[in-house]
Length: 190
Image (cartoon, rainbow, N blue to C red; front, side, top):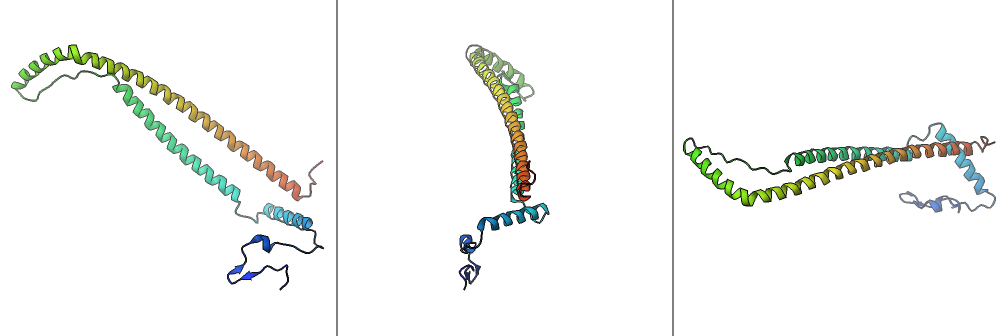
């Protein structure tokens, strides 16, 4: 077997590409061969011979993942806004009136319980309700500010992601243009 021929295994060619592509002939100009290979690849790419552009596939997958994440983020933000609205509506504690479902005796029970609750509530429970309501009000205001700040940051991240995508497209165009020019032997340069 010629030493330039790759060794074959029982399952096919050896998977070690360094051994397969090794050129030991001193008469062969490796740079010239590589230039021809690059030119051929550029020509075939321009002709559409390569249907699978792995970079394009990777970009599509990345964009799908980002879109899915953005949709999930939007759903999370909607849920957060709804929860905040519910907290906003309930932050202040209120005394609930006592009611009874008993037809005749219920009125007496309600009157007695209301008198007792008025006395205990006035001196003990109302200060606690007021203190808790003040705390709840502060907490809801802080949460509202945090939600607004989070929304501003999410908008900023979205703008930066859009800018990054635009720059990636511009880089890809420049790389493609550079490859086209190098494939033509630099004839496009002045």
